[in-house]
Amino acid sequence: MSRNREAKRAAIVLVSPAMLLLFALNIFPVLYAVYISLHHWSLASPNPPRFAGLFNYQELWYDGRFSNSLGVSATFIALAVLIELALGFGLAFLFNRKLRGLETLRKLSLLPVMAMPLVVGLVWFYMLNQNFGVTNWVLSLFGIGAQPFLTDGTLAMLSVVLADVWQWTPFVMLVIFAALQSLPEYVFEAARMDGLTEREIFRRITLPLLRPAILVVLVIRAIDAFRMIELVFMMTKGGPGGSTEVLPWYIYTTGFLSLDLGYAAAMAVVMIVLVTLGAQVFVRKIADPGAA
Amino acid sequence: MASMDTSTARLAPKAARAPGSLGTGDILRYALASIFVGFCLFPLYMVLSTSLKAEADIFAFPPAWSFRPIWDNFNDALFVFGGTGVMPFLLNSVIVTAASTAAAVGLGAMVAYGLTRFRIRGGSHLFFFILSTRFAPPVAFVVPLYLMVRQTGLMDTHLALILIYTSMNLSLVVWIIRGFFEAIPVEIEEAAEIDGYSRLQIFFKVALPLVKPGLITTAILSAIMSWNEFLIATVMTQNKAATLPVYLGGFSGSMGLEWGPYMAVGAIAVLPIMIFTLVLQKHLVRGLTFGAVR
Image (cartoon, rainbow over all chains, first blue to last red; front, top):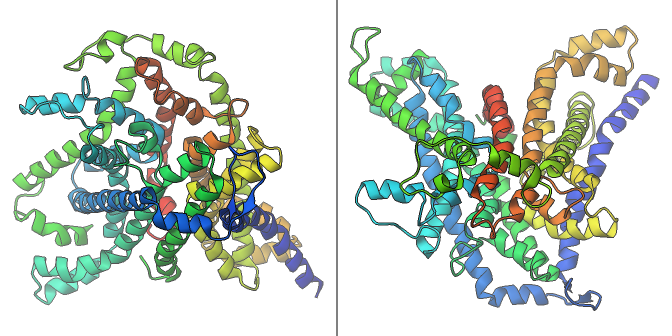
């Protein structure tokens, strides 16, 4: 009996500090964000916050800048994640060979993954400079004139995507590579004994077995691409003309440059809802022990 | 490994060559892999090389591939650039990173153990709640957190960043360490119980030492996350507790001329992390996918 009591007390001692912290800094802020979003809450105004009902949300509905930022975010996520997945997938197969030196190359390619995103933005900002940037030098080798990478709307978006692709393709490659390495050998032996061609094996066995890993990395990358703000901060500041103004950038400038916290909170609530929907996929996948 | 060869044989159809010799497929493989690695390493090389260049070489076009390296930029970056140099900010980064990492690993290991080894009602819900915090976008939380930090008088303090980073890293720690705890045979702990250890003693003296590799992995990952974090830091700190990314970000927009010291700060921010990345690389997949892929 006392053994049981002791176990209960131990469990509470172990679990509650972290839970308190998560409650204070994770659950409460969500509720607080909803509360703030229901107010006219400006740090620039001398008046105290005033209840506004759904005013901020109505504003969002008619705000062209908000819908633009959603579209820009969607474009950024789609381009970055698709390119990272396509490259990462191909590269995983490329590295999946026992050849001398290939393992070292694979390890070296991982270096961008953990680099400070702000510095990633900084160095690509430098390399994409129209006048002395190395990318324009490379283009000049092919007889192509200097491109305004960061001052043309379409090119600016592609530039930010490029920096993101540079940082995260190795990660996607590594995840799919790890999944490839863990595939059971006997499945392939059986398939070959059944007379399947290599193409059929790839389509009907390798690919389906890789699906969980692909899904996991897809969701992680999509959600992380959605929160990306450092590259935009360093490379474009949302410009030119809002062409790289992703939702996080709009939230940040609304809250901390225009000081309109109520409106920023309304956008934050929308973002939390969108992310929660996306994260469901991941949580369900990971909840299934046979996921990967 | 043999299975891999069969699954990818279509990429290298000339599999029937003599063992040890390189087919054209292999050479192509090396070539593509090298191009990719070159692409991955080049920007890092640019950070380092630019930080060692004199101004004339920085603005040179075509780029100055061979140049006389100078250390002035690092001197400026550390002690001069922006009035104080990066030193005080570096110190803040170290304090915040160390404290939040220790707290996240400590608290995270406690939860992971509590939830794997004790029957707690709703325990699996708690696990998934903790997992879901991994996806919380900092930019959406920064508005309420900003007001909370202001109202508690924690603006521009280490403590504000330490608490927030700890909460941000908990999910990672809990999910990775959980896998390690589950791998310990229960018998070991049962034996300790028979020896008269209390449950908490078992945790600290028996279980924790057994998951040391997991603790190290998650500590390195948490530390890198805290070290790299920019948005929360730039909103919550101005100077007293401002970290390295805040210092770096502060010059963006007005940095037309100061590429050298700026890149030197970048090099200081990135190069130590590169070493840890290589150390970690075996655990990186498991760490970054929360054990969903190993």
